[in-house]
Length: 201
Image (cartoon, rainbow, N blue to C red; front, side, top):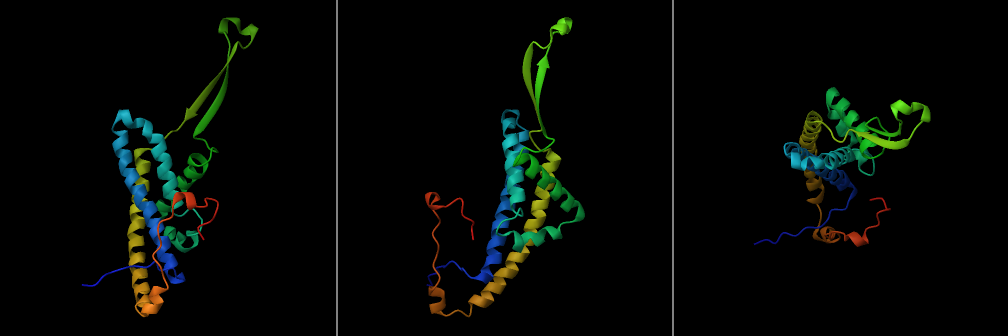
């Protein structure tokens, strides 16, 4: 009986497939969180989770194509979206950039209020108060749009991954035993050994 072992294929030709794996992971987890959103909004005791889950959905969704090291190789997938899907994507990207990740938006309004007694207005203001208006979450229709865009992109990624695996199999099937032994299986990194300021590559 054969014993199957594996090594981590760290060659330039495998980089694109690795990037696709990362994008697919982000999109699939976004889909899972969108599904959880429907459960939360149907339970009034869980409604407090709408804001954090909306923030997580937006950040994970846009992160898939939001720049960084895998942006150049996978960004073309956005061009496969329909015009309507691309407009929705840009809309959600703006919400993520200006509301979820940064506070530069029309979704929140912080107010300083000056109170006075109407009958004694000539005495001026007698107290200072504060006010805060927020849009705390996306609508169910917004969540459904994000989920649909993710599902559409995941189907395209599956086709890309299959083609890349075939290409890599053609390349690596010519490797000798000595070539294969040059590669090692990578162990998962421990969190305390990760330099968070360092780029992935």
